[in-house]
Length: 136
Image (cartoon, rainbow, N blue to C red; front, side):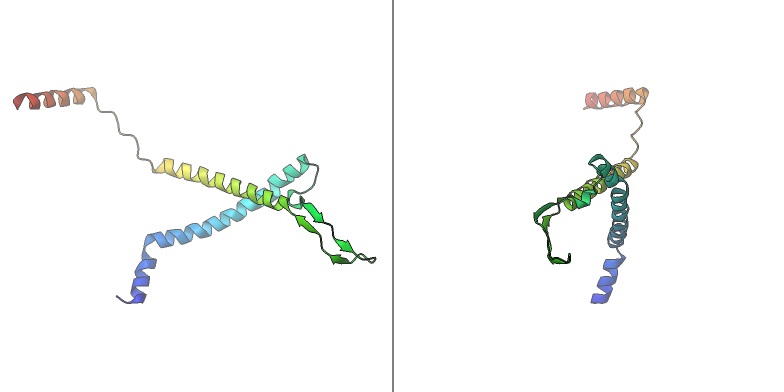
């Protein structure tokens, strides 16, 4: 079997195609959630915390040095923990929504519970089993 035909059979399997579709949909879904966080969640947090954007939160270690004309000679050194917090919120929201989607998907995939066996059938089976043990 040649390499091309082996590759063709590998690609033709459903798992590879399903995985590719899942990656593309996941990337698009991530953009939607990021837009939701940036457009709705973070402005609400900014209102609660005094109007500054969460992404702008930082701890300045060394402030920027400027000359007399206002030109930056050395940029500031800062820990931008607001960006980390915003990314963490993105991650938690994406993980939560994926959890909800998978939970709904698994609920749809579960087989319907079997109907209870009627009482007369149960009694007939007990009688049958009792007669089998007596005849031995």
